[in-house]
Image (cartoon, rainbow, N blue to C red; front, side, top):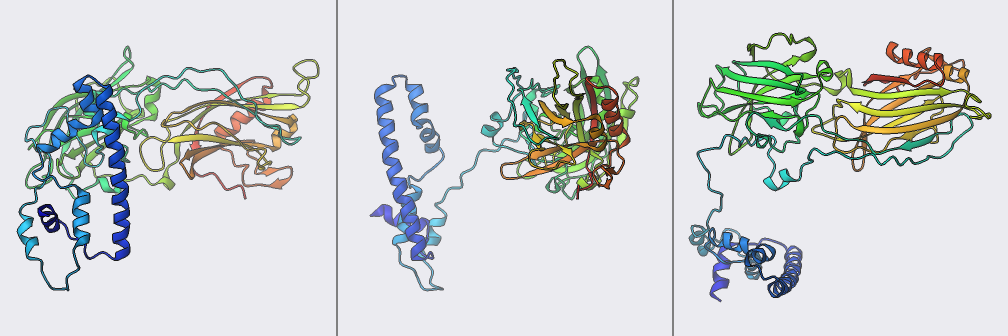
Length: 502
């Protein structure tokens, strides 16, 4: 009975309706049944497991030991709720004398905060994940190609697609290292351009860094040296650190960080952030260096950034240079010229050129190899696939898709398609349309696409909007017509301004 009195004072749910109270009682009853089952499981473990340490982990006793050191009360949450429901509702304005007396007995439970932070702990406020979740983030891996191809379905006389697919060799190119440790990385899946990232801190000051590419190691090295004259972020202090991306890769694996320098407006870092990347890829990347104030109890605050187009960087100059920090400029989706590139190959086989009257009709072979440097709609990494039509046939039978490649901004599809029923003159009137899509559980969003045709604006004498190929796209299609039975390979940017077909 004494326990009822104590729990009565701790929690009051008498304001709930009877229906709400009955719902809570139902949940508590289910909780009680589960508790009985759990006790049975633990009882069996105690009989079968002899190792005390292993038994403590399997039964959950380790948690009870930790909790016993942090709590002064033994009340279960269900006991508190039951006691509260048993209480009668009091008229408005009437105060429970027990409640004010018991508030002081409640203990605020919190983890002890340490004033000293290790050099490897840089938890972002805007991208903090629990430690357990961080261990579950995708790790660099390599998948063997199994070589198994699957034939698709035949379609109409003009375009009968048959699709083949093979598992890719999926190798992550960028390494998760800074000069300190890979644990300098956090589990960020948030966008570089997220509105919630930016605080109301004045952007001022400058940053000094140096760039060098080590050809033998195939490694870009960013030497972050120091910052000067930074703004005060909070309470006349700043705890700055520097974060880097190689745009358009804004994923967790593409992020690097320095350590936090506490209470400094002129921090000296002298750290090297490293990226494993082929030198040929550098001209297509933009180095983003941003300075942040680390807030241990809240969201980190943006203090300025610098963006450098690596296509125009003088790689003979490896010395340090100063750059003024700039406010953040958000890139809107509708002003992006491209969200990445698509690597593919095409081949046209005229009828009867393979011998023995094969193929019976002309065949257009399409090999979707990979995409490079995709830029997601929102943030982080993504799942993607490629969809293809050979227009003017926009029916379901003309539509072919690759498999969905998960969690990659440079996915390898290695997917082949065959469209038959063509003559060379038909290809002059046709258009191969490729679109890359970001795949979600219940939806999809188009990132961009390319259209391969002669770009005449008309097909079979009728004006059409989809014959709008760029000069690069037209050259690929012309090479296809001029070189039958030969693969024509191309790497083209994904246009975000594709004209709707109708």
